Amino acid sequence: MSALEDLPADLPPDAGVLRLDHVAVAVRDVGAGAALFGGALGGRFLFGGDNDHQGIRVAQFVLPGGMKIELISPLREDAPVARFLERRGEGVHHLTLIVEDVEVAVARLSGLGYEVVDVDLASPHWREAFVRPRSAFGALLQLADTTTRWDAPAASGITLDDVVAGRVVFTEDERAVLREG
Image 1 (tube, helix red, strand yellow):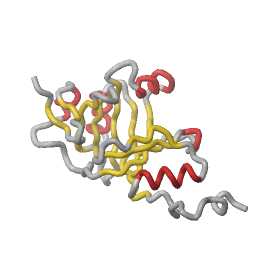
Image 2 (cartoon, rainbow, N blue to C red):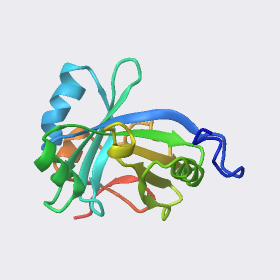
Image 3 (cartoon, rainbow, N blue to C red):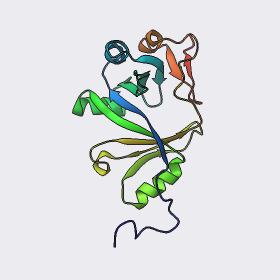
Image 4 (spheres, rainbow, N blue to C red):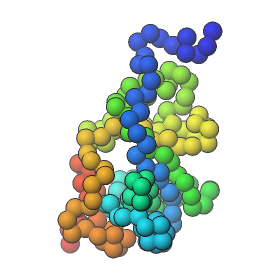
């Protein structure tokens, strides 16, 4: 009997993946990463800012052909991406999959024995969970459902220079805004 045959009947037939949203690359300096992905490779800056809660600076680019790359760098030493950089150096950090419903995806994957961690359902604008690399053939998978469009350019007036300089912050409703003061 296969593992699929052993699953409870009330589990969904699959994880509800809609698309690969982006590949996240951990970098020590978003500005240096932007020189490659936004300059040499011809990427167009979409948006970015600081997530003070997670201790990261983010900048997303869309490459010619539509592939999105997210650069992430730590803002403090206790940020998970800082530990990642210390252990592994710069490179691919995770793949983000947009799913129909993150709770359904978690139930399906957990039911199949994959290790799903860091489930965060607090914000209706971005709900997420992660499949550990040891359960996903070495890849960290971020599963997310969202009410926000993440393919639209930055809010008017916000530039990559603002992001690199730390002048942009994400609000609780996931909007990037210029910091006050």
